[in-house]
Length: 119
Image 1: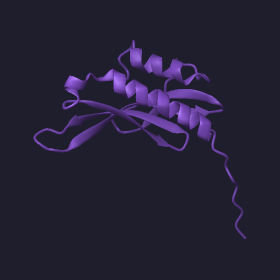
Image 2: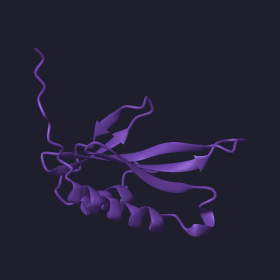
Image 3: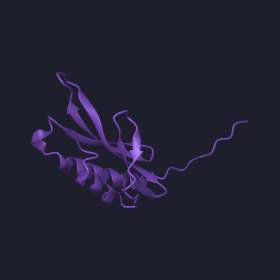
């Protein structure tokens, strides 16, 4: 007999809808319309994680390349911020204290005072 434990996602439908609205407005305002043929900004959900990424045209190709900028994770009802290393592994940013306020975490990533997220 196999026992499975049901895991309740922390990202309830209301919170997900709220974050979708915040992120949609953010990516719309962040990149000026006149340069969207050169760079795009978008986001995706995977479980309790929200990944912010930029897209750029690949060199000598019609394809677009995705470059992950930051990941926000809902853990213990707080949003933690993570950065991705060159080997594709995500790391918790220890000096950004997890917070219930998603907008606060997004603002920290947007301002990126250390150059950790934006290339």
